[in-house]
Image (tube, rainbow, N blue to C red):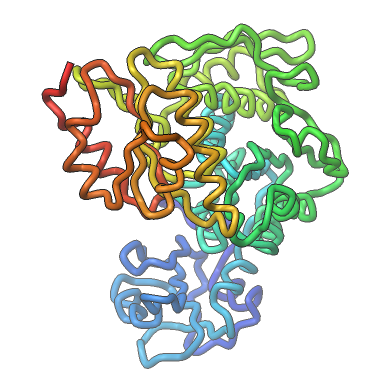
Length: 455
């Protein structure tokens, strides 16, 4: 599909939709793509010159022209010999263009949001839908106000469903995302302690993420976590399907089991339907992901066999709950990001692994004034569930405080890495988790490289 032109989107349409002022003769052919990265420019595409904090896209208009871009969306005209569409705000214009382009496709759109597990849910839902539909899904971390338009611009005629991850950190962002995506099905994973610096508390998190409903039609449906205290009680103003393990869930998991390092298993129940599934990824949160995939599949009329096959086809993405056995230790690599809710989930998953449980935890960022208390609470939970707690980072010092005198704390990642061989023993199960800025991939790599540890 990458070679196909975009549906109904020509440079002239882009100029009309964005209200841009045109310099140069716009080509008449449909655009081949839309990009904000000059390195990915294709012949016949639109290059959007976005001025950023570190890099200004206007500096790369010449490179886009050399690579054969059809036109440029920009905030100032330049002498580069390429047709240019001038707008006052290139990013806002890109959102308007994405909103128009999404409406060219009469297919089911699934919007996925929540404080924890958005990417896992998106991957699982897409895996299920792919058993029947050619499915577009968000790639990489393209889930914000710049990434979502780029996701939508990847739509082509052959797609029959789309799963779009929608991430926010402040009020108003979800409203702008939803104006583009217009989900037919809105999925809420969990409401937790994420971005509290900007959203205040969990009620604020729900209020911000609840903006999704404003852009959804009256016939749309919400799929929400029935095990989440806020979501299960919330009135979304439209038909709502709850998933989870509690009795109030319309799509629920029974007979949940951990199949060692190979993954999880359960029976998904919905009305009279019972769908045994094997989930090829480790952790209790994967059961929730399977339920979300099944709930969306059921809404779109998929069979039990298709749903089970889609769950089994799921593939773990990056450092999100990977379980790796090295021969010395078992590493639960979940260092992609962290907040108190996701750390709790990871700790609970760690308890399912054999061996001594070691939690290596770093700073959890963007928690605002509640940060110290939430770090201490996380430390106390880690001490309760694990045999050893190792904390690293200025904010994570409070994790060590909460965990008690047996916990070990390092000010820097370098100090932690130096001491690592003395912190773990042969046969340990080790969780690695911290906010992205901590760079804990280095900790995972060091653990994987250990050839000998103490017995």
